[in-house]
Amino acid sequence: MKIGGFLKQSLIDYPGNIASVVFTSGCNFRCFYCHNPELVLPELVEQNNHISENEILDYVKTNSTLLDAVVISGGEPTIHKDLPAFLQKIKQLNLLIKLDTNGTNPDMINILLQRDLIDYIAMDIKAPLITKKYQEIIGDQFTFLQLERILESIYLIKQSKIKYEFRTTLVKPNHSIEDIRIMSEALSGNYYLQEFNSDKTLACTNKNSSFQSSELTELIAKTNPKLKLIIR
Image (cartoon, rainbow, N blue to C red; front, side, top):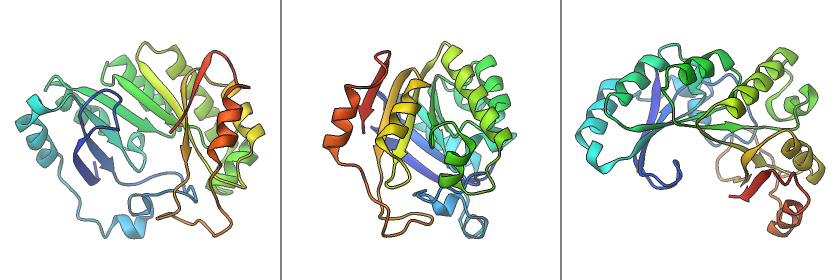
């Protein structure tokens, strides 16, 4: 499994826990606002000095008394077939595991759930669950088949017995207040609205901007009451 980055300690990536964060290389999406292009674009991925699994496992094992968890992010972790084997090694150290995913590989998510290899899952919802809207974020290569797989992942996550969250990075003009309302109606649990950061992106332009906090605060009162909408 190609690993392009490793954060030894984080207080914000796994709610309520001290965690190491592993960033896998490679992704099947090309979100224009992506803030980790070096983990997505093949030409940049190849330039990375990849970190070995053993190096990470050695650190985590040595410092297991100072950690509660390990977060697996990316890129997109679920494109790696050897992900379950890597997570099994972390589990043997009695640490919690959180997975960040775009939801396009429900088969892998199901394997991880069935084997009790994850304790928390965070899934990115890019846009209202319509092919055309997703294409505005990812590009024309996004297909209806991928959308179906995303819907399957949402179902698996909502039916699971582990902690979970959904989250959306909001970018004007690609998202609207109505888009957020539509997305929230399809979800449950915690739904995080993340502010767009233009400092480093894959392909943002000067036309892209963030929502005002007042706009989002007003929206919260109008959304699905079964959903906990949180501005991050």
